[in-house]
Amino acid sequence: MKRGRAALCCTMLGLSTALLSGCWDREYLKDLNLAYSVGFDLIKDHKIKETVELIIPPKTEQSATTNEIHSAVGLSTRGASNILRARVRGNMRVIKNSVQLIGRSLAEEGLKAPMDVNFRDPRNPSSDVRLVVTENDASEIIGMKKIGELQIGEFLTQKISSLERMSLFYPPETVNTVFRSLTDPGQDFALPYIGVQGSEIVAKGVALFHDQSLSGSLGKDQSIMLVLMKGKSGGNARFTKTVNLDTTKPIRGSISYNVGNKKRKRVFHVSVARNGDVHVTLRLKLQAVIEEFTGPQLLDDKAVTRVNRELSSIMTEEAREVVRELQQANCDIFGVGRQLMAYHPKLWKRIDWNKEYRNVQFHTQVQVSIIDTGVIQ
Image (cartoon, rainbow, N blue to C red):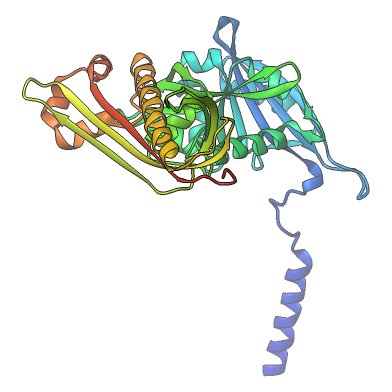
C-alpha cells in the first residue's frame, strides 16, 4: 500500500510539473523599451507635451544600444503618456528613468496637477529620479539625442551628479523629495535649472519655487552660496573673486578658493519680536583653501588676514543678495514658516505667510578663514 501511494504521488507530481507554464508575468528585456529620460512641456490650449528617450536593446551581442525620441500631446500627463505607449513598438517602461525635465512654462503654471500622477503611481520610480527645470522646452533638450558619445539621458544624469558635487544644488532633489515639499506649507524648494547654448547644455543655477510654481531663479555663484547657507555642501564649493589687499599701494588680484568639504559652522535662529515682526539670524563660518592667486605678491600672514577680511565682506554681501532674491521670489527655502509652525503656532495661525514672508528681517553674516594656501607659497 505504501509503495502504491508513493508511486501515485510521484505520478501526480510529474503531471503537475509538466502542466506548469512558467512565470505568467515575466517580461524579457529584449521586448521592452526602457525610458531613460522624460520631459514635460506646457503648450497651447494648456495641453501637456511629453517627450521620452527610449533605449532600444541591441539586436546582437556585438551591436550597441540605440535611443529613439518620441513625443505626444494630451490633455493631461497620463493622457499624453497613453498616446505615447500606443505609438511605440513593444512595451514602454520607466523603471530605468533617472531624470525628468520640466519646461519653464509648465513650471510657472505649477507642478501639482500635471505631475501628480508621476508622484503617486507606484510603478514610477521616485526616490532617485532627479527633477530638473529647463530654460527652453524640455523637448528641445531631449531631442538633442546625443551629446558627444553619450546618449542624452546618460549625459544628463552624469551632468546633474557632477553639478551636485560642485554644490550648485545640494542635497539632490528627486521626485520623492519634491512631492513631500509640495505638501509642506512651511517650506519651499529649489530645483536645478539648465539651458542650451549652441550645441551645449549648460547650468543656469537653480529655479526657485513658491508653493508649487516657479517664482524666480539664482545664478551659479548664488546657487552655491544658497547651498552653503542651508548648511550643506556637495564636496566642492569653489569661488573666484577679485580682492584688494589694501596695502600702501593697493594691489589687486583674482583669488580662487574652495570652501567645500571643510569644517563649517552655521547658526540659524528664528525669533519673534513683541510687535510680531519675524527675525532670522543666519551666520556662517567657512574655512577656505586657496587654489589660485594672480596677485603680484606672496600671500604672507598679513596678506592672508586682509584677504580673510575682504572675502568675508564680499560673501556677506552676496549672501544678503541671495536672501533678497529669495524674498522677492517668495521662496521660503530655509523653512522659516516651519519654525513658526513649531514654536510660534498662535502667530502662524493668524498671519498670511504668502504675504508676510517678504517682510521677514534677515540678519546675515559670513566669515571666511583661510586655513591653507594650497600650492600658493
